[in-house]
Structure formats: structure tokens, C-alpha cells
Image (tube, rainbow, N blue to C red):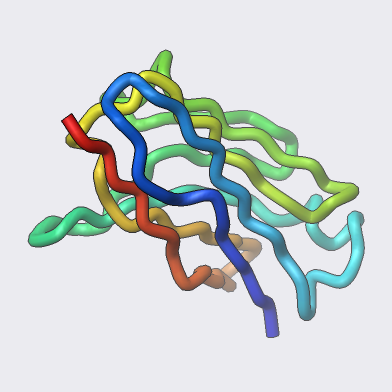
Length: 120
């Protein structure tokens, strides 16, 4: 099985920054295996559907939801089997539980989520 553990969430004032991390372990036992996975950050606010925030492919191509373009940046460190989400200029509407997802072929795995709260 694959385990994904998110960290880095918390409470921040509007305009502040946070850096989320998602570390993979379990069946993702090596750098080479991790590098095969596409990774994504999703978020879910109360009463709303989960949405894709940012994704990075195995070849490190990235894409973002329009609402975070220019403020968020996704990156990966295959040697550490970790994906990051740098979040700058945070807004109250960014408040949500942020989830990490790893996917390859028809398989996908989710982390347990980390809370991000942005106060106005």
C-alpha cells in the first residue's frame, strides 16, 4: 500500500504564506518508483466539492486552477519522495482541507489531509 502524509498546514493571516509537504512511503519505496507517479494537491472547503488545486506530472509539467495561478507553486523532489505546494498571498477563500493525491495508471492514493485556515 501507498501512504501519503501531508504536513505544513495551519492558521495564517491573509497575505501570508504556507508550504505544504506530502511525503510518500510504503509501496512507493524508491526515488525511481515515486518519479513514475503524477502528484496533485486538492482542497475541500466546508459545503463544497473537492477541487484540484495544482498537479505535477512524472515529467514535472504543472497545471493550476485559475484561482491560484501566480500565487501557488507545486514542485516535487523525487529523491525525498515528496511533493510541495508553496502558497503565497493567501486569501480567506483558500481556507480548506488540503489533500495530496498520487496516481499512476488506474491507481490513485490519497493522504489524510491538512487544514489550512486563512484569517481576514
